[in-house]
Length: 333
Image (cartoon, rainbow, N blue to C red; front, side, top):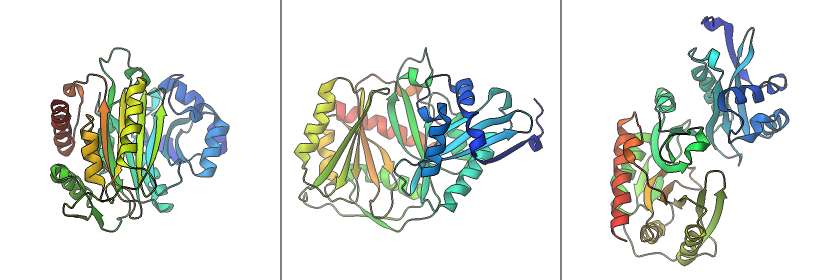
């Protein structure tokens, strides 16, 4: 294939491009790719019209559409996840993903998003190198996030882990955070790498808890997520019961919990979860109104951290910290 970059261009997805996306997806990811809309042109166009997706494509002057990359924004919020990145094998190695990523960031800034994030796989480092190239910062891991089969890996010996990278497109204001004392050093290091200004609130007596708890389960990934929001009518006991239901159910091989760091109850919530074997796994930046989140998880399957590959010094340090926390909470049970 001719490597002349002038033979390629990138642009926002147009209606006439959409018919080529199912074939592109099939060629790159096979028939079982997790994002079903890329097999259905009408659905992909609807999602682009609503703003839930923002797709860009790479085109070759003779072959037509040869690449696709998208921002995923199902809640139409101020943050988007990068994903659905694919280039036909015959057209790889022409920096098309880089060129599409540049356009995606320009479009994200145009619609005034605060930041974008991506979950890079760790059984190889190529997607991590892309995040590094665009100055994104590792903020957490999702250990054992999905079965190897979900990533078309037949012989990989364990569930696939992801490392989350984040990049601010515009800086939010300062945030007062309630971080458990034993996680403060690592959390502050992540915030510093992001350029996020935070004030760590001093330790205090446990505050009354009034929470809203939302829960979801991804069948294909055998993965549950419990999201805690400030305000509501739930208590720490309700959180423990919700978590226990996922653990007892047996279908979830990994459970993630998201804790709002703006809530004075965050240290108490963390302690309750650690007593059930959950461990710190990262920070998620959000806007000033919602406040940043601390992520915790529990994994019900063995996982060898030696098989988790990283390219960034902070990611490597963070992975080591998460591994030691996983061992600590396991030993205390």
